[in-house]
Image 1 (spheres, rainbow, N blue to C red):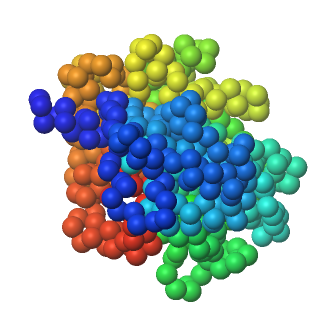
Image 2: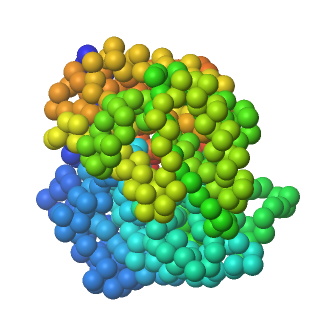
Length: 501
């Protein structure tokens, strides 16, 4: 028990205080931490705070406890001490100057977007400077003929699609929360449309990145937005999913897609988890070009009914959506109904009107909050694994059995068209035994996914919570290669320290 509780503390599942000792490594004219009185919390010196204000202006720097606390956590259970200061730059030049200033003084740098992550990626485990990029929220350039757009880090996916509304184009990657697009790049985000349109890895063409010392990198070359290239190493891919540990993403060139001519959504209830997931596999094997296919178990479906005022059967359920021409949709719908019926589906309900579809998908995107409402006052802990499609029925059925056996309150929901799903577990963080069981469940699920040749995270990232599972996934040589890349780009280890590696 003691070792498990220590592990929980290491992962940040319990609130803790205390900063690392940082001043000894510095050899500078003035120390950025105020050492007067041996302050254990490592408050920044007035001189350093003034230096930050000289870069971005006094109104864009805060050491207020409320701002620091707000920027010390995301939507996960992971809780750490807040950063020492929060800074809001207005442009890439300021970001570059901030990075150079922090790096010259040996101060950790933590990039921050909307704070909607689920693995503690923004936690300031060593204090330092949180750089909030949300004030950089311009859409810099739209190339409609080339199906691409350049955005600053503060632009959210909803804001981009509102901007694109009259262009006939849209950006389909939708992780649920209205996340910032460059934050989605940093975490390698996915979402309900990924089965047809891909994840962020498939939709990023170029990145502007401020490296730890302040230098500016364009990963595919300045201004370039080609669809494919065989020119050298894939630097763009290196930074997608890097979780802020290699640099600060200050602009992204994204791939856009034509708005489909017609769209139809549906819900379909099944007698069992096995039947629902078998239907998913059969639809994909039949090459039905489904745009979205989401699974919700009966507990999640009941929670969504209550939270979003739906009236769906309380049963394992698929949410589906098809994009295309009217003629193509008719064929897709017929084929999907045949496959679902063969697996015992009942109550196939189609939603053709835009408002009806929006209501249905709003309920799916609110699944996190619907699950939290099952146990008011508790915290949510979301697992995230992905397996080859052929192994999806096996792992989902076993996970459902494990969830029942654990005695935990939880739901299953997922982007099953990609083999990716989540368990949302409700836990009282003050109940150490319950926390232990949640941790054990998450580790068991991650290792089961690895045993089936899958991954410990399909879209949430590693952050604080899955570092051991990452090591088991990629092996010793993989980890050493990652560490070498990190050391080359960030030799002082100041970019979002304590995450991933």
